[in-house]
Image 1 (tube, rainbow, N blue to C red):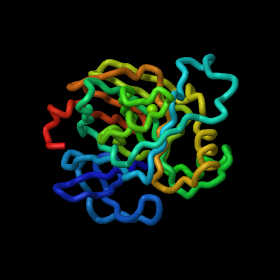
Image 2 (cartoon, protein in one colour):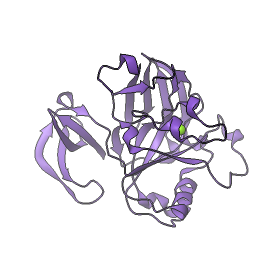
Image 3 (tube, rainbow, N blue to C red):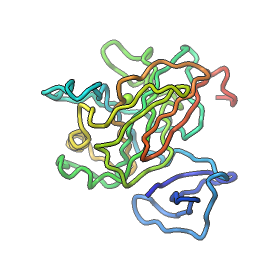
Image 4 (tube, helix red, strand yellow):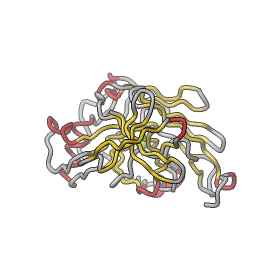
Length: 259
Ligand code: MG
């Protein structure tokens, strides 16, 4: 099932995507919801980020380029970081490059959406707590990293976390390809089995530290191939089974709206 959030005119709606339309729903996608009598044509709506995350957690440097390169020993403490929910934008929105710099990096990622409160969950049970999956672009300005590895500022600018286009609830996360095309040229294309910290360990580890809640988003790391981009560049992050998340980079000066 593919869940979406969208605007029609000036109002925000929730929906489920069917073959030829969007059926509106009302309620809480993590709890009780039901269909309304309304149906929308995809051509008449603007897709938003498919949820307003409760919180966003990322993992750093989590892919190798080939299976043989996966380390035999995993890092004892994985490198996790938070991104602010205020950095979220939806499909087709502009990613704004901060004033002080000319370029930022794109990072196409599989994003996990937690559906149930999760504490001290074992690796074998983590998928019971997953609601679904979307695509995240973990936009990054490493120029703002501290040399000691403190990443928060470089990950946190407004517009730095495009999410979408939908939440897919029926996905096998262990066998999908995470792709990115920059100006229609392929830059990233890796199977999720190239992750160093695999999804079960990632979620189990986190739930042994913090209680995960419905609406928490975990960005699972980006394949090899992310690179710097500048104003005018178009990035398409893709997972075939979910869709394509397309955004354009603009400098603050060229951004159409006051910001
Ligand atoms: Mg990342």
